[in-house]
Amino acid sequence: MSRSVDLFISSDEPLSDVAVKIGEVATLAVKAISDGVWEIRDGEVAAVLSDHSYHDDGDMFLSGYRYALSGRIVSSAHPQGTPVTALLRRVGSALQAATPWQVLLVIDLQYREAVAEAPANQAQEESPPGAVAP
Image 1: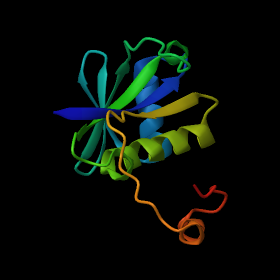
Image 2 (image 1 turned 90 degrees about the vertical axis):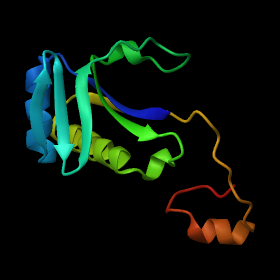
Image 3 (image 1 turned 120 degrees about the vertical axis):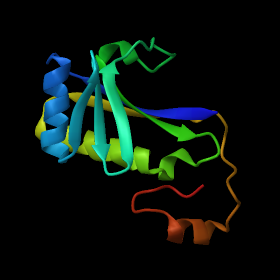
């Protein structure tokens, strides 16, 4: 069983133009693999760009995004640390810096990850700058 990581992209440009722009700004290989589907690749890591058919979900208004760049991860992996998530973060950052398009990274967390309790001072020391300790 696998799960997905999706980067939603809001652009009025045609899909082929969005694919080419991703390749340019993120310096990635881009290839049309079928009608309306593009592969974005960095070495062994790949994601697929296409129109998306997701519906709005609660407070997540996906209908405002025309395209999704989607990658699969195995269900046993921690999605935040996978190569495909890193690829989608790279693309999202590059698009935000180079285009007026809005992007939204959605990591499919089907199961809550166990969080080990740490002493408050240790959690504070290991947290990234600006993070709030639990």
